[in-house]
Length: 489
Image 1 (cartoon, helix red, strand yellow):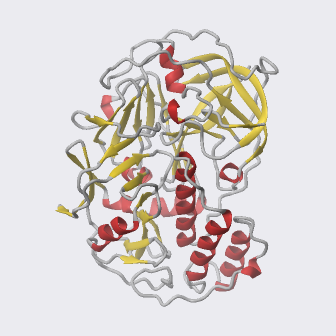
Image 2 (spheres, rainbow, N blue to C red):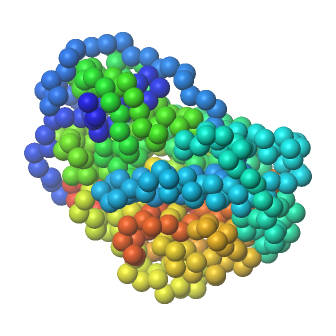
Image 3 (cartoon, rainbow, N blue to C red):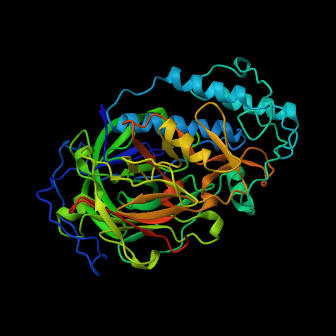
């Protein structure tokens, strides 16, 4: 049977779903969580579980990430995932595998395979290794199906060939720590949070994802779960059998909760680049195809905590991972000033706000009437093509790669800011650089803002590139979003 739970688990082939009803919504402003909580009673399941309790364990079945892929290829993978993910979430037609594969192949063919200074590998070795990796993506049959062609170099397009010479900007260049993390695919553990009802967020590689550890099963076992504000069911499909057991999230128990032991996964989760065990949807339950509650709604229904969340995404290059998510309120020690609250304009269950104008170095670009889905489960910012082009036209030294992506100088100091609730929130210049196009950290970098068909003509998908710079809060009860400048800036 195919199931779409509010959160689910992967390597142990497990997923979970919250099933109790949510009786009403009370209007509250965003606030700090209560100092204490009470245990939650067991509840009935919509799925009639086949067993009550099982011992759960994680299986190390994942391969290492494709760290050796060219940054432009990794960019296209992120763009493909974002576009496919959003199409599924908004119930629009999902691009076919053939379409996504064609975009990936085009990107790969546009990359100069003759990069001479690529992290200690000869050109032939790199070409063979990258070709083999690409052969396993999207059902491609063999590395021979790719015939790399040299690009023309220049100011950082897809054909940038390792001799990147862009020097526009006076910044320090791409972080060595981020570059090393992108190559080793390391995970930076989170510090232990001090706020109540709060769990730390581990950083995947160079800030490409954020996940926390929760406890599941009898006896309880730790599982790593992506905290995803952009879904209620998760993206993709899994198949399996329903069971029932206990869940513990940030010290908050959910007793007798329904799980499914899966037997198959869609490619969204079977991909070798997935370092976590599952995904927890933290949008609103109206987005759920099965009509089940999200974890925070389930906890709020019992009165344990309000249906509010607070996200702080840390930046690896800052040297301290104090990232966290708070269930039931906000952690005021993680942001400056007060939260700017504004209405959620989405009626499907996403967290989406009306944007004011976009500015670059204080100059407004005239992009009015836009909205943005704020999604912790997405790495990049994906904007309509004309908007993405307008942003990069205002960044000195930027260039289009002709395929929806852009490059900017790794040393760029351009300040891009998005406006919500009448307040402008700046993106740290270092967050606009996704990866260097070569191992020259002062050369050209792939931009963290790309173009793609998000949904509506004026709709943006705003991920971690922006959210690292703010404290991001949501309230189901008031159907509002709150943003404040992060302490780290």
